[in-house]
Length: 425
Image (tube, rainbow, N blue to C red):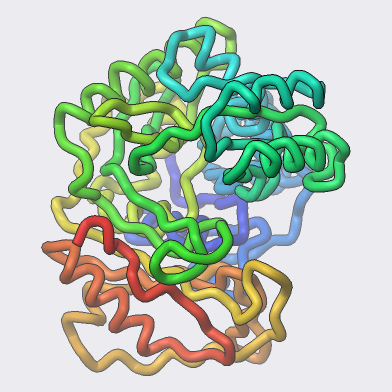
């Protein structure tokens, strides 16, 4: 394998911190860089403030960096991978063309229809009249989505026909999500349970990671507004071998084959947001990167050196890697700032108690996200501040450790759900 002593991770959240944490376990990796990173990634490597993709590629060349890993969706949709690959650099992530699977809901739904991949009945339109007509044909609740990227918040589940029409009107007028809502997707609501499934792909070969379940709503008991995610756990007992096989054969494989046929070879992470209805999988959405907070719980379960796995995916050689997954469980609880997700909160110093309990110290860790550093002190500055991750031989044990860790973390206004993984328990 090529020299990957130096690795660059693009992004600034808990997902990128977790990838860095996983890569750092590999003794072959001597140096980590983050662009831009956050206040805590400095403990893992060096933060660099270069946002221009061409200048970043120059930095990679000048510093002999052997692998770049792109965390968030925006740089992927904006074409960072194409710029790096044009210069012969190893970069893990999907091309601009392939990233349309996340960048445009319209592109994704039309792609699913073209390749007969199971999904909800839908239309995509920029016409208010057409959206009203289709809404009348559906039973409530009704799902209304803005076409473009909205930071995970562009989906409204309307509880009445009137609310669906009002939402479609606000999106199309630009009042709700600006340009991201110039086109909308309106679809039937599927009643089942959600799963997050991640496949690492080199374009031809792929490897599925354990299925995870994310908790979107802000408050305990699935109350309150939708967020970017308040916690997750993996693997979930809500899936069996038969369902994995259906997902692989009906959704993951046809998607990768179809993308290649359309000239958008898919390399990177294909994240399928699925709805399971009577043990049949339907595609709700695709993302082209690790989910957040799912990444934080999946990374500790990967026993194969992560840098090697991601590097081989960039080379189309994933089939040469023996990917080993731990048989343990992982639970992550997001601790958010006081006013999340409504408005920004006042920065608050984070104090973490020394963990004297040996088992807890060995089987839990913090993945930092919305934090800054000042005079060697960490401050909570973002909406989702960090993820407390617990590992165990059962979901209950992993969950107990995650919550024990939550009890060791203090900052003014901290909030978190107390029921992560309740579906499994």
